[in-house]
Image (cartoon, rainbow, N blue to C red; front, side, top):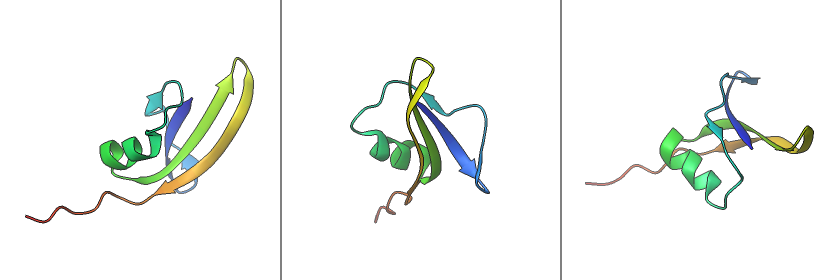
Amino acid sequence: MYVYRMRDSLKLMPPILVCAPFSGLLDYLRDKHHGGDFALIVRRAKTIELSGVVRIAPPPLRCR
């Protein structure tokens, strides 16, 4: 899987994450990359199995 940050509907290179898909991906992108727009591409060899853009809200502000 490749994950790219998006800006103005364009993928920013290089990918911010290259790994196997995992169940906490959306939480990871929210917490470690502060949300935003991301392009996801899941490949198997040269075949693209899934691709799309997700928009994730930033993490909530923490009260002191």
